Length: 112
Image 1 (cartoon, one colour):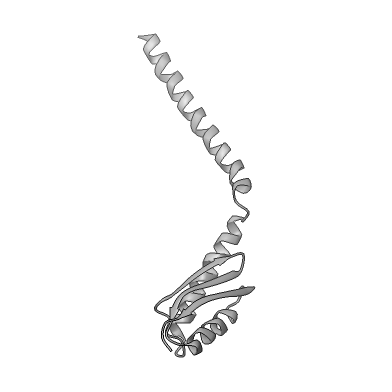
Image 2 (spheres, one colour):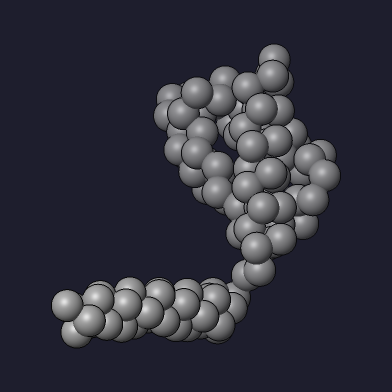
């Protein structure tokens, strides 16, 4: 009976030790696996959200087919717009968002 309880206790300790070790390895490996910190990721996510909101609010941009990605403050616009005026206006809207360092405008003009 004592042997079974000892094995259960030892097994529980081993599981906890394994979990702690796996967590420690994940936390130390994360910075080297990615070149951005958690703060940078949150900032990029915030920028992307703000850009999307501003594009939707802009009356001079038809933005339903614009895709936005942000990496270290650089915003990539992809997708399509109906005119070159929409393409230019979208870039102007994005440049005015706080935290945007540059814009890579890869929007395609669908029809002109």
